[in-house]
Structure formats: C-alpha cells, structure tokens
Amino acid sequence: MTYAPWKTILQKTLENNIKNRKDAVFTQLATTSIKERPTVRTVVFRGFSGETSSGDNDPKVTSDLLQFTTHVDSTKVQEIVNNPWCEVCWWLPETNEQFRFSGKAYIIPSTNHTLYKAYPELDAHFQNFSGSFDWEQERVAAWRSMSPGMKASFAWPKPGAPRIEEDSVFIPKVEEGENQEYLVRKSLDNFALLVVVPDTLDHVELSKKPNERRVYVKNESTWTVEELNP
Ligand SMILES: Cc1cc2nc3c(=O)[nH]c(=O)nc-3n(C[C@H](O)[C@H](O)[C@H](O)COP(=O)(O)O)c2cc1C
Image (cartoon, rainbow, N blue to C red; front, side, top):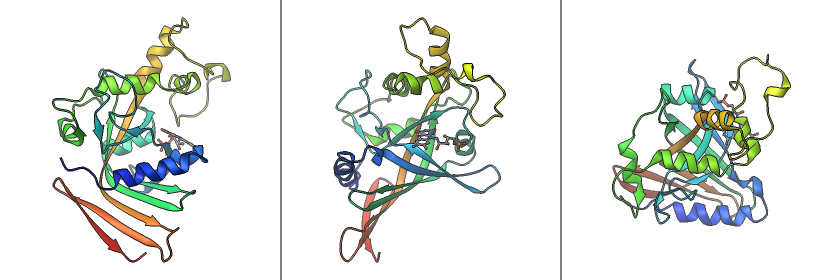
C-alpha cells in the first residue's frame, strides 16, 4: 500500500492550527439522506485509525483512514449504510486551508450489533501491520478516551427521536468503576466508529498568493497529484 502523500501535509497543518485553535478538529461530513438529499453535519476528527488510542493494537501502526465517532442510532449511520459515499470538508482557519476529502464511509459498531460487519478491505490501509486489524479493540479504546460527559451522551435516549423523556434520563456523566455497569454497557453498545477511506482530496491554500489548489486522486493503490487553478 503506497503512503498517502497528503497525510504529512494534513498532520503539519493540523498541528499548526491546534496550537491556537482547539476547534480545528471540527469537520463537516456530508452524506446522502434516505430521500436522496444532501445532508451535512459537524463531526470531530479523532485521528487516523490505529494511531488514536492506546488499545492493544500495535502503537507503531499508521494508516490513511480518517476516524470519527458517532451514535449507532444516529441518522447518518442509516444514511451511510444506504450509501457510503461521503465528503469531509475541513477548513483550518489559522493557516487558511481547506481539505475536502471524498470517499467511502464505514460504520464499525459493537461486535454484537446487527450492523456489525468485518471489513477485510480496510487492512490494506495500515502500515507496519500484517493480519487483520482489531476494530473492536480500537472502538473500545476510542470509547475509553472519551470524557465522562461524552460517554454519558451515548447512554441517552435515541438521538433525533421526539423528546418525551424527563431531563433526568439525560445523565451528565458515565464512567467505568463508578457502579454504573448498566450505563457503561449501554454507552459502549451505542458507540460506533465512523471511518472514512478517502480516494480524492481537494486541497486549497488561501494563504499562498496566488492561491494554490491541488487534487490528489487514488487509482487502485497509487495516489497521483495534480495542480489546479484555484
Ligand atoms: C462542534 C460539534 C461537534 C460535533 N461532533 C460530533 C461527532 O464527533 N460525532 C457525531 O456523531 N456528532 C457530532 N456532533 C453532532 C452532529 O453535528 C449532529 O448534530 C448529530 O450527530 C446528528 O446528526 P445526524 O442526524 O445527521 O446523524 C457535533 C456537533 C457539534 C456542534
């Protein structure tokens, strides 16, 4: 698998942005609704799969897979199951750059969830690695890295459903080792990874004069890059 040539550029840009802007990890994820309309929402970039957390997966593993997290009952999950093609549009304000990724999204829920599937095709996206990537390990490690407040949100009533429950069910915190076994289980069961496999990146640099724009396209396993008019 060839190394994605845009990865070190994105990592450097993100590093330069995050120093002053914690919100630099907010991206916009576009999918297609069940009624075939465009739909977009903010999601937090959690890192590249395999590199994000300290599970038992080898810490030297790297990948070009963009990792996000979501509630398995959220509307976007159904949309992705129905049509995995998506875009991630990411503006990085400190450096005035836009990264617009296009590709396929994968939902990785708990292994006992009806949507669970093995995706052996994702294994080729990891470097320093052979075999079959342990996605459940990755998922649990990603859940453990969440704050107690974020963990709690995955144990709340179904997202997007009419609000009929009392406020008290929207518990503020969930944590392991706090006698909250039922809530921990519920939160973990609803927690899913959302992994984007980009096959195109449109990178615009507005800080350059004149502005610069490059498009990276993946054919089979090889990335090509072409300079475009901005
Ligand atoms: C700053 C910010 C960050 C967010 N991060 C996430 C996220 O990482 N994952 C997620 O599923 N939703 C996140 N949300 C909520 C989504 O934007 C969206 O409202 C929710 O996921 C429901 O979307 P859906 O109905 O299209 O599934 C975030 C919202 C904001 C405002």
